[in-house]
Amino acid sequence: MKLDVDHITRIISEVAEEEIMPRFQKLAASDIMEKSPGDLVTTADIEAEIKLTARLIDYLPGSVVVGEEAVAKDKSVLKSLDSTEPVWIIDPVDGTRNFSKGDSVFGSMVALAHQGELIASWIHDPARKRTAVAEKGAGASLAGRPLHVKKFHSLEHMTVSLNAKHRRWLENRAVDGLGPVPHMAIRYGSVAHDYIALAAGEFHCAQYRRLHTWDHAAGILLHREAGGYDFMVGSQTPYKPKVYAQDCLLITPNKDVWEEARRFLNPGSDSYHV
Image (cartoon, rainbow, N blue to C red; front, top):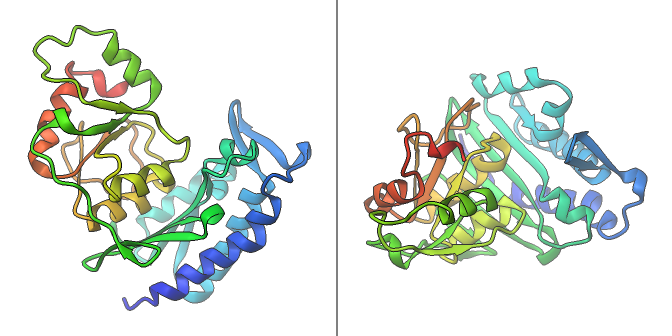
């Protein structure tokens, strides 16, 4: 499958300029809704996904789309992840809560998968007008500059990104025998920005439990192409763009430190459910 990666980058950027940025810091109360308690969606999410869906299918006829907002309306859309056709995976505004508060830490995430394999991905940062791009076997870049993870041989010197509940859970445990405690980073509230930081070597390790494919498909390929490593804690397999009922994704800069990170972050048999 031959892709014009730059053309798709322009599509994502243009949709952000047309549907997201004109609404940034200008949302009316009626533009912010709840899909479920605490799960926000805005008119920017909805309109950006509609336009991205149309333009990406137009670019690649026969392809299908799994978008966050489409799934919110109809769970059966997730079945398209098993399609034999190319699948676009879209999170139109990742970090909707930040966006709705006028915080610029949000992004648009798009991945292209085929038969369960990630082919290409884009993480666009509309507020800063920059895009991180990855293509399988071709590396990763941010605003045209190559991205590379930093290599480590020990968890002790790494910066680890965890959710607040997991950090508290570790802090409340006795850490004797778990090894030196790494630096714990506060998350951005947008996994799009988490993945850019991971691929750029600003964060070095992260663990995620809520594995909606639109939150992780684009970022995982970006991180892999920057030289990073990922593996599922429960199923002991590399991440795939599919539905995970119960599992946990652990991301490290290389395979050598993955097991050390797993032992420290998940010292109990059930701890990856934190």
